[in-house]
Length: 104
Image: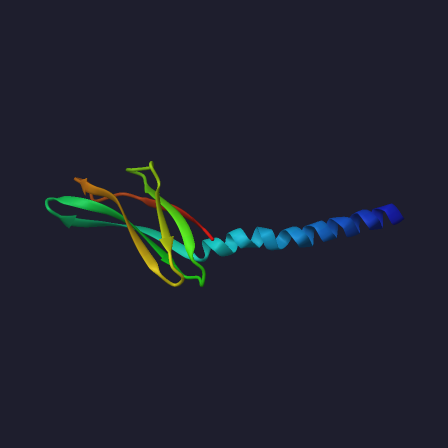
């Protein structure tokens, strides 16, 4: 019986130690949003990815689109700020999907 209680106690300590680390990823995704915008000019569209940071820390982000999945573009976004990344300067298409990942 003592061994079972000791095992449960050890498992509880491991779980409570791991929970804050698991929560950080979920919290980080709440810090930013990524969207794409096509701007028309000079008879073509520019594909721009916009990153909005809603947290009080600087984020390091990589962005890409379904049209240009690589290379990924890097951008730093200040706390409570917004950054724009030009992914494609000349495109005949207006539609594209923007993607990104940000870290502290």
